[in-house]
Amino acid sequence: MPADILIAAELRELLPDTPVPAHTVEWLPAEAPTPAGPYVAIVPLLSRRIAEPELDALPQLKVVANCAVGVDNVDLDAANRRGIIVTNTPEVLTEATADLTWALILAVARRLKEGQVLVAEGGWTGWHPTQLLGLELNGSTLGIVGAGRIGQAVARRAAAFAMRILYADVSARPELEAETGARRVSLTQLLEESDVVTLHTPSTAETRGMFDHECFNRMRAGSIFINTARGDLVDEAALLAALDAGKLAGVGLDVFPQEPSVHPALVAHPRVVTLPHIGSATTHTRHAMANLAVRNVRAVLAGEPPLTPVLR
Ligand code: 8YV
Image 1 (tube, rainbow, N blue to C red):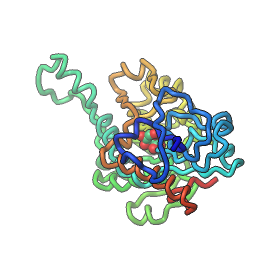
Image 2: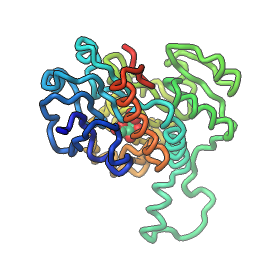
Image 3: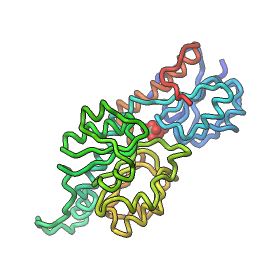
Image 4: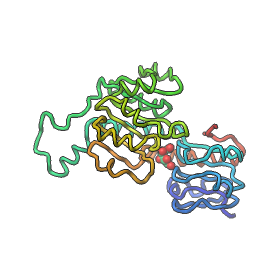
């Protein structure tokens, strides 16, 4: 049977040989363009753009099962116009991404990159009472921009560090407030009062570039900025300016506007921790993401409702 399903080749080792019974898979290498043909389903990674030209070339397509919670690589309106279902992989990656956010918060607050370099390069001459002093999280304020699933999971972990929690979101989260004491405030108040600001909003036409000069100017002197959401939420020039001006004590980034390229000034900066987009990179979570994407394909092809549709 000719292949009728396209799946990103990088997912092959996470999936069974025949992930969708009665269908044949063409494993699509990262560097290969999206082919034209009578394929009925595609499981792309975030790195593959699925927009008008790709959809025009796939006239039989029923479902785009993105293997990511973010769907900024998919033109949702173009899919919608053609009646193509788009699904994503929420829930399964929430805890892993929240963990990684905390890895960055801790690494930046306690200056791990500088400490590691000091030891590795032989510059450590001994214990010193004012060496590498960082931010005491206990009693500090954590500002969560975007209190969706991941933002909320980050907030729940803050209780263990006795942090005061603020969040800015279009929706109130009464359950989160009851559970963690988090308080909903405006973005402006959050920026002015937080010692650590962490981004958890999706990348949309409304949020792209939202973190600009004005936002960084409003942040407290000596605060910390963390982004495990999407690189294009941040105006990188504004971020670099805030670092140069000494406004930010440190920055932790897992995502960048032009991945996999990372601005050399960020890589070189002693107070900036840069990671290669590994928020969801645990064995458990990556298996769960790949399997959820494929279960969405199976459901749609069987004429059932998808498990995790992206609603427009
Ligand atoms: C993925 C992510 O690792 O799910 C997302 O939106 O950013 C990450 O969890 C990556 O996008 C896989 O395609």
